Amino acid sequence: MSNNPHNQPPRPPYTGETLVMRRPNHASAHRGAPPPPTPSARRATPKRRRWPLGWIALGIVAIVVVAVGFGYWQIHRLAQRIVVADPRGPAVASPLLGANILVVGVDIRRDRPEEGVRSDTLMLVRLDGMGGWANLLSIPRDTQVDLPDRGPSKINAAYAYGYHHANTLYGEGVTPEQGGMAYAAEAVGQFLNFEQRGMRVDYVVQIDFDGFAALIDALGGITIDVPRRIVDDAYPTPDYGVMQVVFEAGPQRMDGERALIYARTRHADNDFGRTERQQQVVQAIANEIRQRNWFERMLLLPRLLDAVTQTGDTPAILTTLPLANFDTLLAMGRLAANLDPALIGRYRIEPGSVAVQENGTNLIWDAGDVAALVNRWLTPPGEASEQARVQVLNGAGVVGLARRTSEELSGQGFTVLAPADAPPGNYPHTVVYQTGNAPFTARRLAQLLGAELVVGTPAGVNSEAEIVVILGQDRAP
Image (cartoon, rainbow, N blue to C red; front, side, top):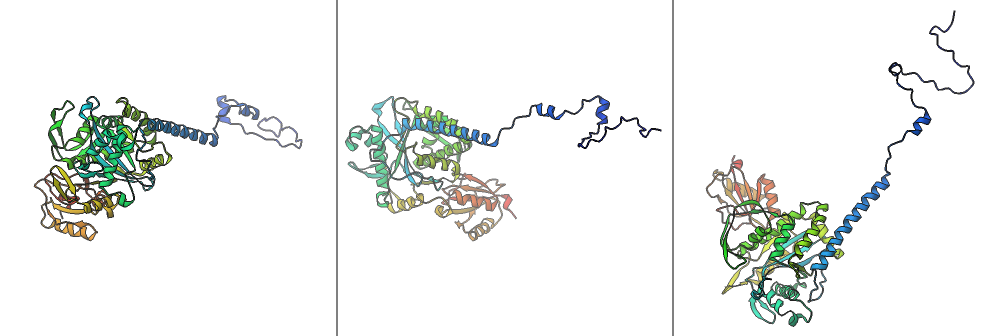
């Protein structure tokens, strides 16, 4: 009888070599599947190519280099077009370590040169790239200052005087725009006693109405939260007429033309309300840029170049700030990455914060109060520099609620004014209103109370405080 009951083929005789025995896959065999590939067949099968990490890193670096190069090329083109020499001499201060930049909004009727020129806005920017902060200081155009070679005059006349006497003041070859910018900077520095502080207005930026509107249009518009309804029945038109303009309260998107009207309107309140709106527009522009990623910011540069050069031979924006210098680029980059536009310090020379006397239509500000305000403007933003006062108003209708809340806030270190009742109305939720320059204090207070934070003044409220709290029903016990 055979010892091979399953009729398997006989095994080959052992030769001393190692044999690899493969167990057949019965399921595959029944389906008629092909046998597994031999080693040589496996080697012949093409594999998916994997890029080495080094090549991937090199590609990323190449993309970054190209993007940075494109960005610098665009900035260099922009600088060639709008950067001009300062006839006062080059500045020593760097925007990376701290510099004073004067922004001059000018009214130039290029189609009607007989109308002359005038500065419509004077705003100083304290810029600190390394510290990552910026503060604004607005100077009313009716401020009286002793202009060199001219005597007492309104400060907004300085630009026009320098514009028309550029060669007399600064020598041959100086353009009217350079002369106006330089003389305006000297007037502002003299008014703020910069020389006694060992400093000066380091750089100047000049922008006309067309450039302002074109800049905002290049950004695709800006969002403004209008704090209260504005009705101006006598807004000036380009043909020297007037028209009515209306802005409803609340957030709204504005193109360049609309934002310019918002920044210039003043008949609904006064010039001090207008400077507040101008600072709000600057903050909105910074916020619009910050919301874009770096690639989108790079794509903005060609549009900005077109915007500032579309008005003809003279660009709509001129500056003495060396935009293409390494320290300026580094300062702007750090600010773009780190600066929260909501925390930009906003200071204004105005009644209530600075004592003032009137000389006809000229405003003579108390020198001591101006110096104290400049000290705050030069200080990095924070609760300590804000020195904010808080007033609590009772909108919940619970007797004693505003007093008790005021006592609690005082115990938390806030400076609290006497509590009062809110204007008649329905207040379901507590709201913290930042009415003055106190973003850091307002944020901490809103977080402490779990309340909504609104920048602006509540309707029907007249308070000396920089922050007004209206307690709603959600604070009722």
